[in-house]
Length: 88
Image (cartoon, rainbow, N blue to C red; front, side):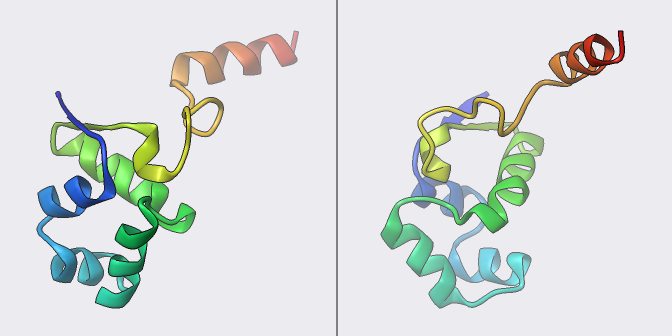
């Protein structure tokens, strides 16, 4: 998979500011503000993450203003293991 390191890269591979703004049902100004801050707003994190993954890209945590994904996005295997452990 291709790694995405910046919000600028993410927006570019998703079609640019205008297309991303339409996709997120927001304004181009909001997309420009995310790019100026250097990361995707938390309210759009899952949309960006899943869409980039579906298109064959691996977004790095910095795209979302994070150092690591940690418990924010957890593999299903760990969720199942924790769920079973909590019910034992």
